[in-house]
Amino acid sequence: MALNLFVDNDVILKLAQYGILEHLTKLFPNHHGETHLFALDSARYKLLPKRNRTELCKTEAAALCIEAFLEQATSLAPANVDIDVLERLYATPGIDAGEALLFSAAAKGTEGRVLTGDKRALAGLSDQHLEHVGPQLIKKVITLEALVQGFVALDADATQHAVRSNPAVDKALDMVFGISSAASAESVKAGLGSYIGHVRESLGAILNSGPPFD
Image 1 (cartoon, rainbow, N blue to C red):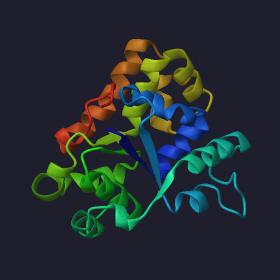
Image 2: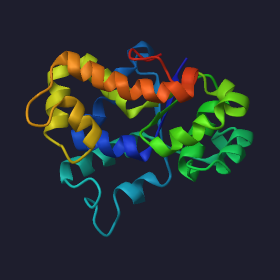
Image 3: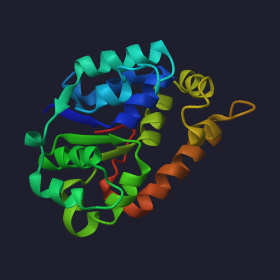
């Protein structure tokens, strides 16, 4: 069965800035190319604004990565989502319309995964998941930090270099991988695990247990 990855703007932006966005599907090896990418309609104009395409991503290399990703991805439309979940999430503080659309798309079938770096949305989801949304999102949410764990498993040295070479992208990840000097493998593992563990305390089984991701 094909896997559908519903990717939020924050994940697209940060992985592009790190230069690893093009390798995203390698984190899901069990699907052997049967992995479909979805992005929000807003992704192109928000991440690559016409007035200055590098305003957010800062470099032309990152802009090209985003552009290539969006050319592969399908734009997510409300027709592809669970409307009941969408309406409930629209009313949830902390979850904006885009994140609500992504979560609702994953809720519609068994093959969806949401890749998100939006901490406010995750906090908002934790207020809803037990009674209403949770059963439809079990193991379907993957955080930015978990994705980075996956990249570390693929190539630890390259991932550490990517993060430490771009310290302005994500301050928390910069601290995990080392600011003045490179952190040890054990320290990186513990740091990423700490961030994910904190989110898991509130979201529980909603979080995918990977890497490896299923």
